[in-house]
Length: 150
Image 1 (spheres, rainbow, N blue to C red):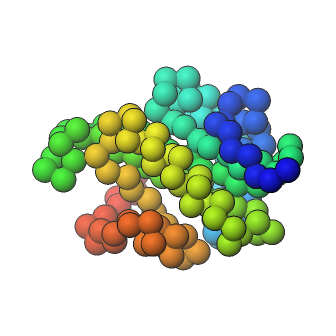
Image 2 (cartoon, rainbow, N blue to C red):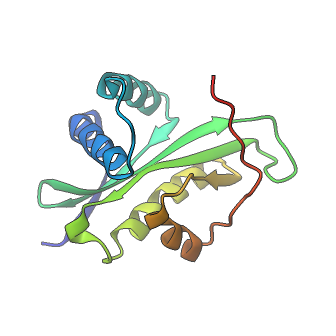
């Protein structure tokens, strides 16, 4: 039957959230809060207003790959005159399905969503595993990123 790609809807949201939690665990996140309710609230609100999109890869009725793109707006700047930025997240492929081009196909689809939304740039904090995919796709390292925790 092959891999089928579909946009995330409320129907698959609970499974999507479970996969997001598994991804964060795989990346070594420290679990000190109950994250699923906060994720459900975020995804529901932002899917409704069009500022979050996700494409999923299915093998039959099983989700085997995820992607996500949040759209934010900052004051326009020279590197991004629209001020619209895509924040890439939730890039995950089931380990049994890796190295088959699924992540690249999902990335293509959410990058196209960002273009359609009018984003001038897409950003990601890449895991070590993802760096190769993003570099080959054309992402460049930006050493300017700093964070202040509140």
